Length: 325
Image (cartoon, rainbow, N blue to C red; front, side, top):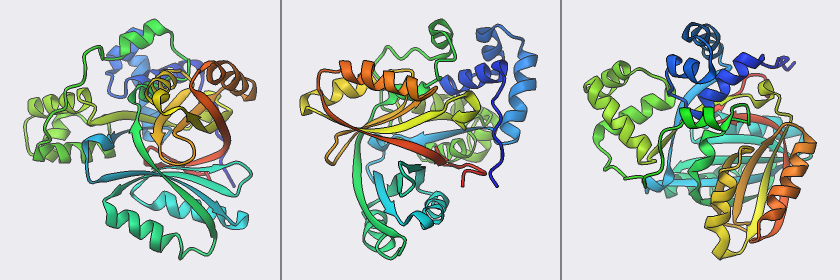
């Protein structure tokens, strides 16, 4: 039986929103920005990380890893087997998201596959050998727009967000990857808030070097830091994936515009009949309607849109959610 997911109170929700916007912000910084004491932040946030309500992690940017193949799959399943298929996908280490969609017979999953062999094994061997899978379509993620990664659910003011966010006005400078960077990334994937001392120990370097390399990796958008939380705990009751078709000349402009919207968690250019994939989180169906009507409707390059409601998120940012199935 699924566990009841209680909403966080206002203070917990605002602390969570701050950590969504700035995953490695210090407790002191979070307290200063939110107008509460550092002690309160520690007392409220530490148990949320300890019990898995919050998880800090890191995700590679496929642009900077040439062998990585980012793929979105839409999988049609037999409804009575969709739970098992979603659970199997969630257990794969290369799945980033696994969502059950629509009428309960479709799954969308985002995978970061390590090369053509991994892709071909999935598409030509694993999926065809799964009797519960009826059909699927695959969509390569051509470009993931990074602005949406500091999503905060509208729980913070613009002034608070500005105080938390790093200055991103300068164009990112891509650093050359060093051997120690791969170990730093592996450690941050396990714990995005690992101390510089822990990062240095795992990468066999100094804390100062670990800090400098982390700042270079984040500033150069080689990785993104993320805080993962079940959005239902923040009062979010309407999530959907939007498959949007825009004119080719408008892909960059439209993708960037949408990625900056406070209700957008993810935006990517993709192959397939639609050329933008956008994940939206709204307070309720009315808020989702107004997003579609007012925000999407005002974009000049959009020609068609398919809205697929998310019934349940089984895995997000590499985290399998307990009680999600």
